[in-house]
Amino acid sequence: MYAGNIIEESSKQWTVKIEQRRSPPYPSQIAEYLDRFVVGQKQAKKTLAVGVYQHYRRLEHNIESGAASIHQIKEDVKNTPRGVLYQDENRLGHIATSELRSSPITSQVPSMQTPPAKRAPPVFRAIPDKEPVVRLEKSNILLIGPSGVGKTFLTQTLARILDVPIALCDCTSMTQAGYVGEDVESVIQKLVQAAGGNAEKAQQGIVFLDEVDKIAAAHEGHSPAYRDVSGEGVQHALLKLVEGTVVNVKSGRKSVGAQQDTVQVDTSDILFVASGAFNNLDKIVARRLDKKSLGFGSSSGELRVTADDANSEQARKRDYLLSKADQGDLINFGIVPELVGRFPVLVPFHSFDQDMLVRVLTEPQNSLLTQLKLQFAIDNVDLSFSSEALQQVAQLALERKTGARALRSILEGVLLDAKFTVPGSDIESIHVTREAVLGEAEVEYTRRVVENKQAVSAM
Image (tube, rainbow, N blue to C red):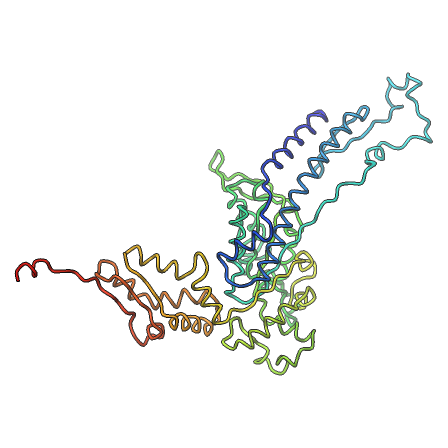
């Protein structure tokens, strides 16, 4: 293939990429959208909004820079005598100029001869006079915080506003290649499937690595023969994907012969968002900061502050320490330094207290109470809660130590009998009291008044 044809085809591909890209919303717009669905976590929303905005602006810049580079190469091809373009596995092509004196034609023309001392080798002629365009590197994001505070939901909501494919992966099921369990590269296959088999779209998507703290390196004390296939081994395998590599995965599309097509995916532009509770990371931070005055450092019982602890003071101390965590603390936790370095943006999440959980129940656009009311409204039944009932639900959720996830479980149990009784009945409204939440009484029903016309006419 001629050099001009190769460059022209590449130029068309970059033009299509530019036309397909949409400018991302501004960080303030992203945060405003997140506020409609997620309560609290103001600092986390701000950090995520900035990180995601910068990532997709970086993509735009690199795509435009790539198009500009292709245009420059086209000009170089036009102006290079006897230019030869060839392809290898890693680059679009290289321009090389043949030695003029080696040509039987040019050797006959004295005017084309150049003294050896003034001639540069062909490889040096291909170096441009101008500085190369700056290529921006990506900044992956690590979410740190207790369970049930919105880490996963926040990332899912971000993907909706950006209209990009997202793959959610549980790191606890991952093992090194060759062992029982999910291969690390399966996360890219999930992303391609989320993109409908479109590799180009998948390359600009988001991979959410949940429970990344569960693949921390094993503690000392194991025998030399022990192989940590689900811990440090997985971290090193993930490192290749996060850094950027080309992997072959199944697209999910069937080809001739009922076999799935295989596509190549470059992970260099995929945004990786990792998340974990990192239990006991607060103790590591406390030792570093020597903050024994906060109540940490005497006994393991005092140091272990669980997510959404009923004692708000303990939760506040834990949140403070997690907000001070840095890359060194994560390395001491068991994450390999190379992988920690690929996640420069640390986003701490704070625990929910009782009042915050009540807001989670009532304020978001798609809140749990809104969903429950809609379920009963389908049967023409009105559902209401007393303020004391909502406070009690939040208190029970705190005691279960699973954050906002406990809210649905509690309310499903409270409303089970009502969901069984309402369909086909004459009930028109349900009111939930604090006693009903505690199981000390039933929910209050109001029934429709039906006039008995036959009885009235008989009188």
